[in-house]
Image (cartoon, one colour):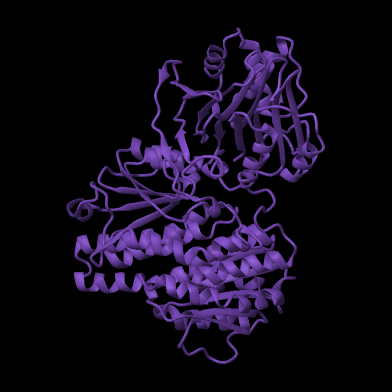
Length: 606
């Protein structure tokens, strides 16, 4: 959840750290801070609020000369946002930053208090730095190993020891960290975008591994303190992908990047007009043998899973269950060894989703991960992985990552249908050809942005808003509602349209805003009937539907038509105007679109 960076080299450390943190602020923006190895020792500078507050404070300092330091941007868990609760935290001899949660910190705090330590903050992190100090014997590596043997929880740590200037130690458990290689300089970060400006060469820290970083080299150790060698990787994301490139917000840029991302994701899994998973284990025989599929994810990814469920069941006649990851792991799910568990995560680091993956493997199921980040924890833990090609997604509210997840699920469904013979090869080729039309159609949808902005201006002052749909459209309603809530702070709910009469309609009064989705032919008339029910009770309705359909008069106040497209694939078109509507509502209300309050991009704590 929080963002961590580190730098050792010849440059001005504070400038590098602030620059790197600016690419990680999506991971948390309650406070920020840096620790610098200055000539008189470690100096800590931190501030509550956005990173810019810290940057302004550092800009005033003309006396800073450090070429080594660590930085942190915080999403608060233990302790409210404040200067005293901000990272870095220090003892007399040690300073660190932390992402994660120390579960037994209260017990450790009691032990340390009895030993004479005092505490200024409410954080679990201060307990950790004091425990390191308590165990310190002059050997950083031994001290880290001893301390972590006493700790229960999750952590990504960057640690500086007063006695070892120009050196950073790092260790992880259930919290992502990478190291970056430079010439006469080396780096540490929570995520790849932080380092793209400086290097593309990196290694991933695995569970329990420790990195000792100096400007000359990076030495790795395993969980027992033995030296190890690490694979060196190369990031294929470009620098521009992590910049706004003239757009007002990252979210708007990422919405407009969807045609390209869709083309790259879909075309990479198509060969000779047919879907290809390019996974050795996903043979035709294996796909034919599947009796049940489980899709497990959180939030937006779970909504993608709901679309995937409907597509797979329609095309392949295989039962699919969709679970929220945080619920899946605690309900003792029934999973058989001949079943497939699909895990969806943009970052590949979401803790609840990773835990669900591990549980599925313990139960003997085959696991398939759909992730965006190469080498992420979920990607490495799964039996198979399909990468999406969204590139870095910086805005907290997911847009393009969601869309490419849908694309992968459709390709999977088509391949499964081909293997099981539920659709002929000729039919699959026709579906693939239709799927490849998507990028051009998305460009047409994006051309209607001004229309969506106008509609947002009419509804921007509402306090409550409802989304309605059936089938695919219900899954899209859930996602559209979530986007609106995330970034505009408008109370919004999504309902299956057929459930209106079972209670929800009591909430409809004169002027209530309703967004209705009706893109599915088989339930079109039913959905229109439901819309009439809310309209008759005074609702103001925006209807999203397809070109060429006959919409009765007085059903909706405003109609947004989408290009004609195969009904099966309509969710990938429908998502875009819903994203734009949420975006413009937030902008017009003066909200911070890319950094909505209380949210962070990658949720690495429970």
